[in-house]
Image 1: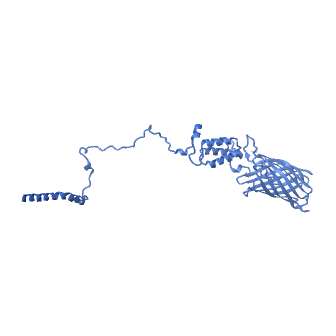
Image 2: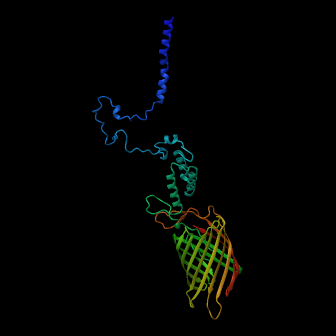
Image 3: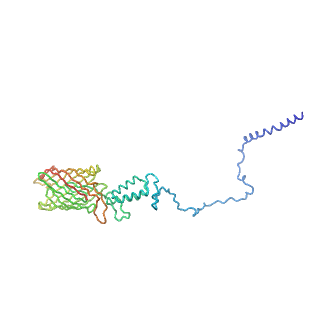
Length: 408
């Protein structure tokens, strides 16, 4: 019994440190500090036999691309930025718009076909509407070229010798579309035919007939019949636009007329300066003025000074209102008697009954210098004339004017 008890105590004494060892080891690992240990060297990681191995060779240049692997001219442009090219009609039928505002080749071709029989102005309006509907059109460049060509055709601005066809020129080379005053000629050289008649009291009838033909944009000639304070006369003359700019809406012309008075018969020369300006009021406020001299080539010779001013307001493309004044003076500075004078005020309305208003100019054909139009409007003239200052001439005390102007 004593031996058994001794063996048991011996076993317990031996087992106690064995069970306590793991706990003490863990604690020792947690408390152990390696801060003072030396930093490991790369030689510590070498294995046996690696001491004499040479280091790997360093590459002096990068790998060379294999020319057969990839082409040098790769294009990474987004395919959506490229216009589609259709090789056959089947492609046109299958491709659909890729986004809002885009068209397809089929839509473009169908529009082209519909406009093949349209007039230039109708086609131009249609293409402008097309681009509003399809602002991202795949054919925008073609449409822009076509609209420029149509604009040049309509405005008579084809550039001679251009290998790209017609294109838009400077605005200073477009027409101005001035109409003619009642009592004097227009400052704008253009092709027209005018015919009016004055019926007045007590017994006055004065016809006016004039045909003007535009040889060049700034040069015109005219012929007609006229009647003024000296009597009826046959008139021939020419007019040159020194300045004629649609950018500033300004015209300045010099004119020279030869007049053959018929009762009594004697010749006259009238040099004159004319000016016109359009102002942006409603559809346009057109101002025109003339100052000139009638040289009576007879015995005794005489000089008559003439002036005229006209203002024409266009409320729209159909109805115009005008106000005008003219004056004739003779024997200025005479000592024996007062000078001759006759001043008239005129006012009235003009109407454009023809559809479309003023004509649209077409390009010149071949080598012809003449300007053509696709519309020929007639302007109806109704007005009244009242003398407000007269000395030594009183053949009428007022009149009405009726007539028409035809712009070719």
